[in-house]
Length: 112
Image 1 (cartoon, rainbow, N blue to C red):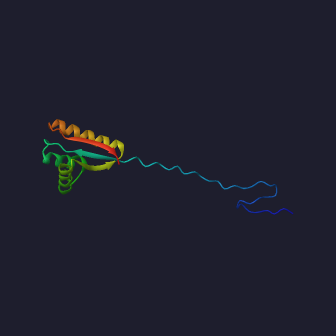
Image 2: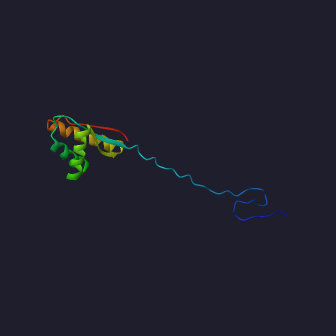
Image 3: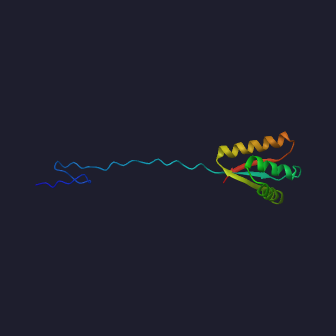
């Protein structure tokens, strides 16, 4: 007499197996982060840089001043890390705002 098992993946009388249905989970890939950088120049006023950091990167006065001083002393500073699209938008906003106010401030982005 053949052994009959329940639905636990065993065999039944006619030799067929019962399988376990599995569902493949699709994982969304995290977007590559990009750092937005401000570059120092000898012409853009420090107050304008602080204004840009507050307006486009939502920094408070203390944090914006700290980043501005870092840019002034080291030549470059990180404003934040974002997805590609957000970083690109922020770079464009800062550059456009600087040009409108006749400042040579440079803003760029790089992979984090």
